[in-house]
Length: 455
Image (cartoon, rainbow, N blue to C red):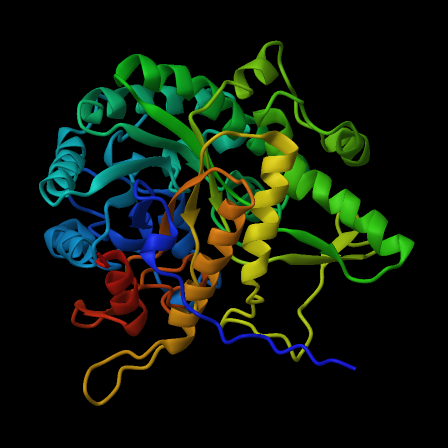
């Protein structure tokens, strides 16, 4: 009998990746900016959600967050000091328009213009996300994404922003994680606007995808040499057991969690089996909608955190499928998410084999741990450092397997407002002391910087 010995893990080095591979980090406006009442910004659905008792841990809000609105030069300096080449940020729609039919808020546009100039001055390539969940509340009052009029409002917003910034910003992401906008916000009720209606959620999803499809040619018309894509949250999916019931549940879940987004984006329409299963909850689709959604894009953004294990769950939700909790012995983050770097390569290989989408960027990947600041002021987040190293190794495996991944954005540059979890959860490469707003680069951030600055 022979015994196989697994060699010790060797962290990747930058030379393992192509010389033109793009490295950066990602943030979003509501999670870091603060300045909720400054310079003409109006209420968003997240401001309203946070003000609703019991919705967010500790009653936290993004009113101050990381005060990035005032401290952005320091934050961009941190990104550049770590050797990053690109910075993914989002634009807050409530900073741009105060109501339907209003003139653009110049102070809001000026802020993002200064921010983009700051990136370029530091050699950071700007990657702008147009919608990262902070819908203006006045639009929600009119039906939100469930109303087709919100698609038109989005296009007006996109036209305004890309005309102002398109001379300097060439990389645009229309939407971040439509699954979260639609399902978590409008069916599960765990995110803003906190609704719990499945039919509404599917109509929201359709209008978000439609707004993406209609925005792409608009951005290209306004921005010479624009590169436009969308960022999806995706998981490799596995059955909880070898039973026929779990296999069938996996197929049902896969239809909504994975194919409901990728199939229409790549010209296949909504999966027919899933349409049959959702029945009367299926969205209203007008003539030309599916062609618009299937517009060719320049890249696909993939946000990866963990795999999902699916089990048959009679009576649970419209698809009677549920995501099983990881086993007690499984390695998890502080949020209970499984740590499975091999899932990243598994997911990317599936996307490439199923759709051949062209260039792929990892637009988010990161981990939540309960960081502690040592007596010396250091944050030795060794688990996050290991998570980062192992996922970059898995990314290399996917690239070696033929997946055209062209860049990686770590989530997140710094600790921030983590949605319904408030400030209890930390994902940053940089620690933020919310009482003082002091920034401290963690061990993970130091390693990422050393990795990126290697010659």
